[in-house]
Length: 304
Image (cartoon, rainbow, N blue to C red; front, side):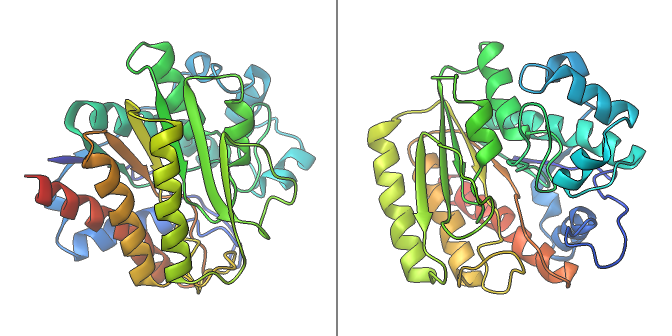
């Protein structure tokens, strides 16, 4: 069975009208219950990451500022979130949630995290609603512990994974690929190992063609990774308030199936994270995020 990593403390208390959908994490789990599929997953909860362990990819002073509430006002502005003890607690939990999902993917082929994808967090500061970079930490930790030799981070969030690229630029055994909207945040892009920029307004057929081409390129550039960390951001959707693309629900379903079938068909373990998804209707956002969980079950069933 596929592991489902989640935690009841992932939600963040934010003021009404804030752009970040702070309770989408519990809404997502509720959606999976409503869909009747939770019982097909093995439920897991992470423990908070040890700050010393996290310093593998995050600055120790920054970790301390998050832990102790000493993050200055400008840093909070760039982060886009006001510090709170709840925010600090969930940040230490969520980064370990992706690591837990990755370890179970290595053991069982696939695992899903009902959070994660905080790819704008840099070494010494947060940004774009991302406190700690779970993708960078997970890949680097598994590599440092000798659990893997080669990792692929496939980031399909609509925004470039700039923090991930910069943190991991000196890690030759971790390949970063970001498929993102050219016109979207961040204005100043980083350099991933492979950046695929998509034009504003791209629809399902255009997006899926680019994805197919990218997967073929990855087979040549980074064949046979030991693990894929897949950021299944749903802010590519046509109704996303921060998106700029015109991908439908069917397009997201097709994307997730295409990615998971591609790698699982080659026997490569995959851990999924939910990435970005923004909108005033949090149940609708949760629905979008639920699609990758359905895709994971479909692929696992096909392989059974």
